Image 1 (cartoon, rainbow, N blue to C red):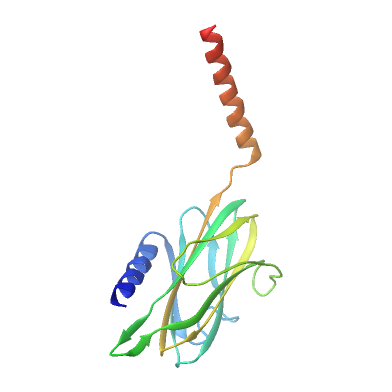
Image 2: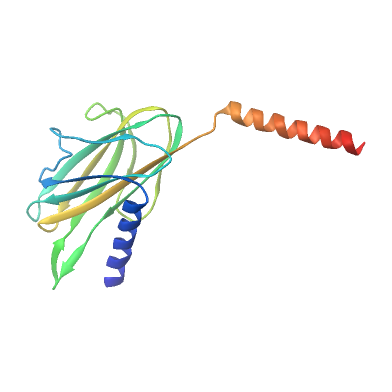
Length: 183
């Protein structure tokens, strides 16, 4: 169990130090509530991370959201991590039933659920997303008086068909010139 905690702490630290980070903290319902949303801004090839600390009471549910923009047609991935800390058999930092949902448009206008993922330690493909506005619905239940989570997003531009056409044309010309030289 201690090994699992160490792995999660190392993963969370790596996410935070290798990316652009936004942090939030507050009493439930948190800063990502309807009154005060998180805003990732424009997501690009550098991972962008939202790290949040929630303070409440054991059993308190929370629902937050974060808006973001995809500037170009992109292959998009996401991951999430929650921190679990138990001292003397008592949970001091924990979140249960953690879920991240990816929707089109800004909150609350999204009508199409694109993907869902949890804090399973994996990177999840959100698919090829068109340029535009999107948002995350983030929810869970505090299993202690304190909860911490981090969500990371990355959007890698997908080459347009014209790029592939130019690549193939260039390879064809190279092949043609090599064949002409050998003849």
